[in-house]
Length: 193
Image (cartoon, rainbow, N blue to C red):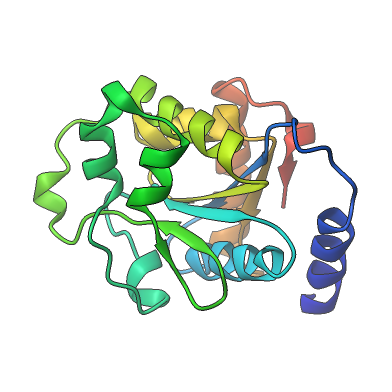
């Protein structure tokens, strides 16, 4: 229910937090393709951005729909940022993001997916940990394919939103995803369906 989601987001957003705490990391993943994973990630980020500093990171290196969905064109992508990993800090990170009119900061995937190459988990960890220091909320759009980057994102997330729809195949796939998350060592208490 959209109203309940909005209420939950607002309750979490208005909760008091000190500036020296790291930001909360929320990973959004789908039970299968087409269930609205990117839509939920974008709307969650937009809802939080009204009152917090929010970064939305597109970790779906197979498709990467965040930029086109938000009608954004970025100069840099997460791949460009990883190339500067040796000097990664909050300033380097914020210079690589593009800001949407909703105040959501977005770190996109590259337009040319052939340029991605192999991305190591420690490189993604560096990006996410720097983001958690720079932003109050870091939303990870993980898509449905679990590569090394997504697995790392799911493991470091404070909460995981598993998106599904009420049809037989989606529910079956959601059950399979829950088992996959358990195999990755993710506690079921962190997963919200």
